[in-house]
Image (spheres, rainbow, N blue to C red):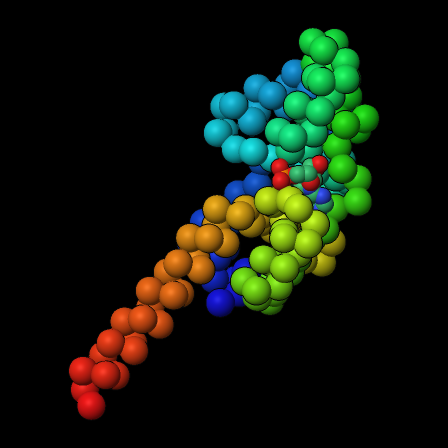
Length: 142
Ligand code: AMP
């Protein structure tokens, strides 16, 4: 199982924000879309990622004034990305090792999707169930 299969199921839709937008607008976006992170894109290029954790950290430091900060000041600029051909195991290693739950998918410098830990778990369960079913059929046929 690889990223290509996940994108076929969930599509290429990615919620993005500009680095000059405020945290207040990021909060509205995350709430409206019911998601945990947005990819920061300026002029078609990925500049960073902003997750609910980054926002909580900022509020802890600056209180409600954090809402006026630009996304650029709060986002993680060093984004770990993946490609269509990366496997589920590679994504799980990256998420576990980096302690994050979102990985944007890049192709030819363009953002073509995003995979969350929820997508990874969902597809891992489906894969395991399929393998178990195949084993059951194999045993029953013997
Ligand atoms: P998350 O678990 O995705 O809510 O993110 C936890 C922390 O990791 C936040 O500081 C995010 O900005 C950061 N983060 C999320 N995704 C990535 C990624 N793909 N590459 C690097 N940092 C990330």
